[in-house]
Image 1 (cartoon, rainbow, N blue to C red):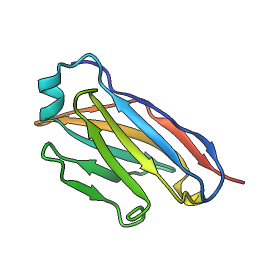
Image 2: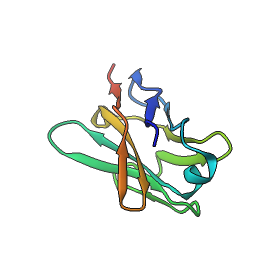
Image 3: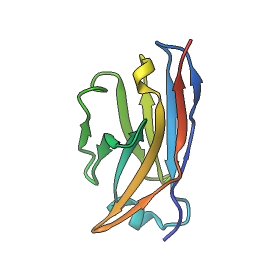
Length: 117
């Protein structure tokens, strides 16, 4: 099936921006196009949905990130992005990419985002 790999995390000051990337390079393009992709984050014991993008491009966002974060997909590159602007300290978490193929779910290992001055 191929692993899901996140990148782009790091340390940023409040008000700054980061762009996370997610790729599943080993899956074929037709499979990528049929998958729903999501970003989750976990700062404590609970993992929460941040944003998702469906096969037809429809997006969904957590209320806490609406207007600040944007999810997109580049089908030709088999990549999914999470653009994060106006970052706040409460956005600090490990961010995970999720690939949903029907009833099958695949997770990446996560990338740390730390928002601090």
